Length: 374
Image 1: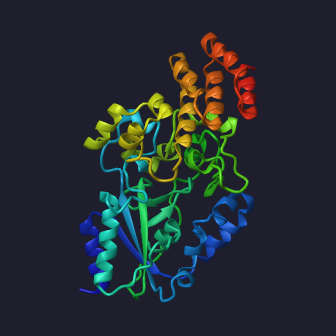
Image 2: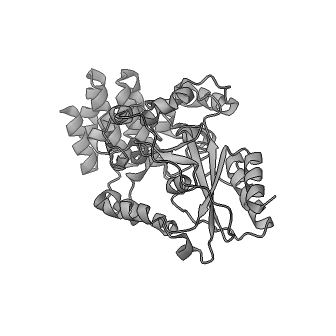
């Protein structure tokens, strides 16, 4: 068996659903497209993580010859209904950039170890643009919602790409997007209208991005979620699947009928938005970190997102929890809690806001309180 055949067999044995191999040529079209987006993608181009570096694999890794693309179907078990309207499925599946000591991270590490044992040098930490790589390797096409759709899986997949220094057997690129003609369901489902046109996304309006990218330390980005985005967030605190749920190509996955995930069932029993707002060390370690380890590293951002979600429930029962949150040390959390109280409305919420207005030390939070009272 050829090295290419061995690689594919081993990947499938590890549980990957699809394996594709392509050249390590530059992703010229991807580079041009990102650069053409201007300010919309400044946060991406200028990121300290150097996302664009991997778009030129042979510059980043001299000797690079091939890219092995691995597709994991993460919707093979049921997701608890009480969680899918709060946390994106890809995070519930614990498979996106998973740590090497967790099962999904171990799978990728085993694949890399196998390649090294076969004499391949593997590009360490080289992040190639995974969706374009999957399309070029023949295992996925782009959907109008900007997700990659893998054969027989739909868009509920996670793609990993490993760059190696060996010439392998290459697949033909996938066909162009195969979305139903004139279908706009994903665009219609997006509450923030982040999908500007087919295959064109404004990440600054996408809820999946907004939960993590509105953080301090990103040039030109405020840690405060814009009010119009807050109202559209609903109860989502980490990720959003609305455009994928609306897609007819994902109908079978959304319909479900899969066996339950025992870990998620246990986690669902202890997850709540008020607990996320309070965010004790124990709740963070036992319930938040195992599924929401990806991007948000400071607790105040989880609390901010929880405050917005509680406000969008419009449930007066959450007024006491939001009141307590306004005793916290983070002005960011207090400001979003004030917005949430205004969103809930009613006599109890107004009384809290009026009482807090006179004692709040931070001017931005006082402005949030005044706006909420209005």
